[in-house]
Image (cartoon, rainbow, N blue to C red; front, side):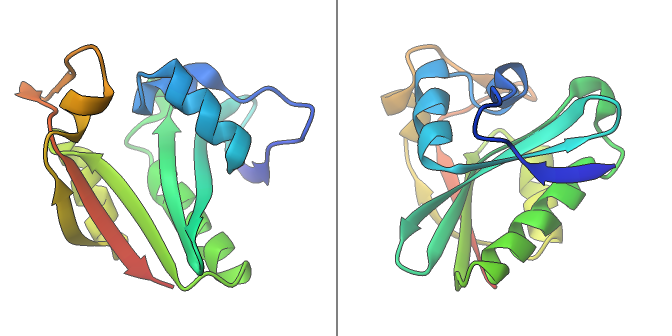
Amino acid sequence: MHIRLLAKNEQPPMQLLLLADPSEKLVSDYVKRGQCVVIEEEEVVGVYVLLPTRPETVELVNIAVSEHQQNRGIGKKLIQDTILRAKEAGYKTIEVGTGNSSIGQLALYQKCGFRIVSVDKDFFLRHYEEDIYENGIQCMDMIRLSQDV
């Protein structure tokens, strides 16, 4: 597997990005402002977007792995790569937010060293027109996690 920065003239893998965030408008906006990284075998199987948010802080705003490639450790590799890129770029903190219903993602982030720092109540109700459900739970709150790098 090969992890690389998306080339300037290359289209981001929107179908993958939309697995993690159903708002095409929001995804298009932060992909333009952030750094998009892909992991590929014969094809792109995963992606993430890092976005500088404050001095010395970067946020992992999207991370997704193809549904047929999940549970192979690809997400963990991508998260480890985000941490390495953040360190190399001189950031001190990396943040990530996920839905209260994203049980697998919450576990993965904590296994990779992130700690829960806050909850943005009703985030998904305020920012998304359609209701989102995962694992039989309505996604309402943004769980914010952080890690010093």
